[in-house]
Amino acid sequence: MSFFTFAHVTAQDEIDFSSLDESYREDQFYFGMTLNFMTQTPSSFSQNGLSGGFQSGFIRDIPLNQQRNIALGIGMGYGFDVYNSDLFLGRVQNGNHVMLALNQLDIEVDRNRFLTHAIEFPIQFRWRTSSAKYEKFYRIYGGINIAYTYHMKSFYRDNQLNLTTTNTPFLNKFRTGAHLALGHGFINFYIQYYFDSLLKGEIQNNQDQVNLEVLKFGLMFYIL
Image (cartoon, rainbow, N blue to C red):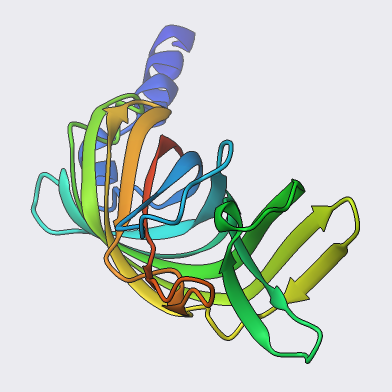
C-alpha cells in the first residue's frame, strides 16, 4: 500500500514540460562591457589610449512562434562610456564652449577625456535553441538601439590648468544604431554601431567638421 502511495505522489510531482513551454519566455537582465572606437573622424582627431563602456538593463521577451525559439525583445537600460582623445571640449576665458584639436597646439597634456551617461532602448529580433528544459543554448540577437544621452562631462589637465566641463552644446543627445549579440549560454560576443555622430559642430582651430560615429566591441551577459 505504501509503495502505491509513494508512486502516486511521485507522479503528481513530475514536471509537465509541455505546460511550461506554453508560457516560456526569455525575459532577461543584461550587462555588458565594450571597447569603444570612433569612426568617420577628421584627420586632426585621434584616440589616446583605450576607451570603454558599460551597459545594463532589462529586456522583455515576446515569442513569435509556437516553438518559442523566435522572439521579439524590447528593453530599457543604462549606458556609461568613457572616451580618451585629443579633442578638447570645454570653456575658454570668455565662457564660450569650444572644440579644439590638441595635437595641433604646442601643449603637453596630462589628461583629456569625456564621459557620457545614456538611457538606452534596445529592440531585438531573437533566435535561440532554448526551451523550458535547457538553460544553456545558442543565440543570435540582433536589432536596433535608441539612445538618449542625458549627461556628459569632460576632463582636461595640463601643467597649468585643471578643467571640468559639463553638458557641452556639441553633444548629440539622440542617436540610433544597430547591434548584434551571439554566443552560447551566459557569455556572448557583442558589436554595436551608432549611425549618428556623438558630437556635432566645428573644431575651432582648423574648421574640421566633427562626425564621430561610435563602434563598440565587447561581451554581453544575459541573466534570466
